[in-house]
Length: 282
Image (tube, rainbow, N blue to C red; front, side):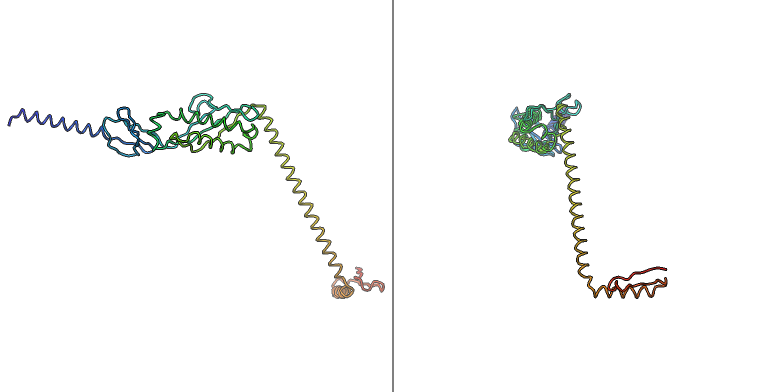
């Protein structure tokens, strides 16, 4: 056997093995937990996404890994808190034409089955193209239905719920689901806020006074009932003070006083018989 041919054959075999290994390694892709894989081959997006785990795909395909975990998008007046640096609070007009500023956070997630569609039609920056404009539109659509006082005080939860429903409706079919909206802060013109605070304080004082008056009324009713009870008890006692009872009671009292060690002198005038005894101490 020709040693040269043997050497050449060995080298070619090794090269083939290396090429096969490279192809296999190129075909292996890992989708991390909390992500989905979108397969793109020659510019075409495959309709089915890859779940988390190890997969064999066409080595010529590109797998885009998209996050499907809960994400947050914040638009804040604080420059370091929001997605955009600087004052990014949302301006909206109330029903009376006052401008309010809302500082909020939205929780959302990408639907894994819709990831290929989202990537193909919107791209990986769907938060900027979908979440942000949807939230701004929903907020302005809802805030205009409420007064500044309602938004600032008792109707705050209703406003948040309405914004959440409106935003969810606008995002329907976009491949992204809105989990919840958190209204972090409401900024009103200073004069309006001062007026609302003063009104709320006056309302609290009025409720406190109403509570005090209600307690006083209840106390008055209690005293009336107590007095009526005492009067009824006295009436019953008076009805029970018959001559026979008074005579028995006088005799019992006399017995106790006679047996008393204090040498008490007892005087019962003739004209007071039938009444309680008159007692004189020496």
